[in-house]
Structure formats: structure tokens, C-alpha cells
Image (cartoon, rainbow, N blue to C red; front, side, top):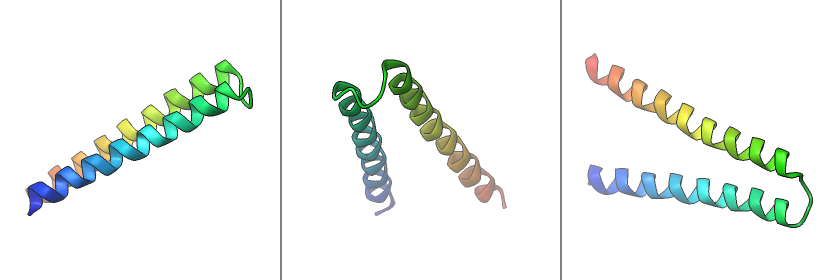
Length: 66
């Protein structure tokens, strides 16, 4: 059961990241935002997902130490 839940969580994270990235690309395509702004938004989105991923991994690791 835990393996299935972890797989489902990973899939949801991947889908949400992809949806947000596609939203930024669509806004760029419709000329709502500039190329520099789109690049900054994509880099920030990647940083948020990686940063929170590291925080969650560290939290789970320290929780197992107790």
C-alpha cells in the first residue's frame, strides 16, 4: 500500500509541475509575458519543487531517526 501511495504522490507532483510549466509556456506564446519573465518563472518553479522536495526528504529522514 505504501508503494502505491508513493507512486501516486510522485505522479501528482509530476502532473502539477507539468501543468504549471505548460501554463507559463502558453502565456509566453500568447505574448502576455516576455521571454525573460517566462524563463525566470520556469527557473523559480523548478527551484521551488526541488527545494521543497529536499525539505520533505530531510524531514522524512529525521523522522526515521527518532
